[in-house]
Amino acid sequence: MWHLLADENFNGEIVRGILRRQPDLAVSRVQDLGLRGAADEDLLAYAEQNHLILVSHDFATLAELAYQRVGRGERMSGVFLLSDDLPVGIAIQELLLLTNCSAAEEWDGLVVYLPLSDVKKL
Image (cartoon, rainbow, N blue to C red; front, side, top):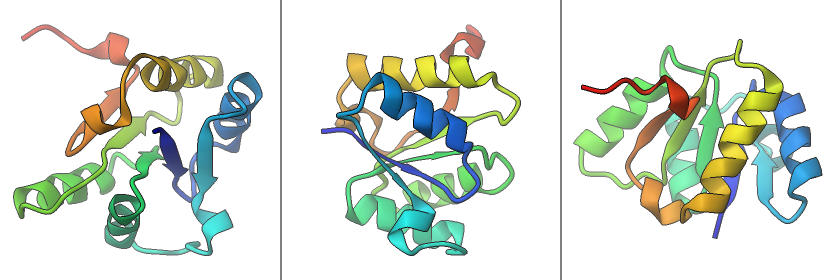
């Protein structure tokens, strides 16, 4: 079952747009859970304990902390990172694509950069 956790600085327009298009999708905001100001490490731990995929614009620190967590052998429910200059409509489409076309468990332990169309072949 999908449940997203939007970090404190995640664009509220994206959250509202997701819920407008798919009202049954569980999306929580950090500030609504009493976690305002929590350290990123604590958010990752909270997300894992509650089976939430963390969505964020925080490329600067969150990805590295997530990689470190997995490197230590700790579980992680997944992190979706979206550039804060990504148009709101595309961000909504990307997140809904993932939630509608995959199972949340498929993203365990992964950091995913959106949009997926930016993925380059190796």
